Length: 192
Image (cartoon, rainbow, N blue to C red):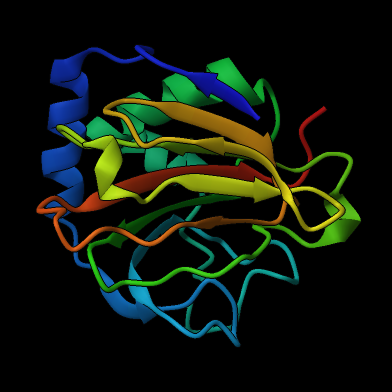
């Protein structure tokens, strides 16, 4: 796990946050098919170019990273910087946002199938205006032994990069939390 703070200016993050919250979300998204809980979600890049890109209802051929970059928006500006910093020339095949509040549940899952264990990468950005550590929502990665290998607190503008096949989850959010936990994720199966 790599943790990076202060990669983006607060004004950039605020523009992104406002823009993201203006996009329609899907409620009832699950970390995997058998996950007990659900949360709010939105796909921005999911062209279906890989067989594991969910089902026909989730992906659309026009939802490419190139198309995302072609339309000027706070997301496209951030996406260019994330690509340059974490993906190089690799094709970003997924960009999505998960939105959670108290009562929304996640479950341990992998962003990509284990066949991509040597090359997949996921990069998570938290465009939250503030976050108290007592609110929970921590990001946890498990090791091969099923124990916590690494964890990161949510912080405004924090970026967390992990191997895309790592088993991970969001821990529950406290009932005292009065903010939405926004996680914008960029992923690729093959980063060399």
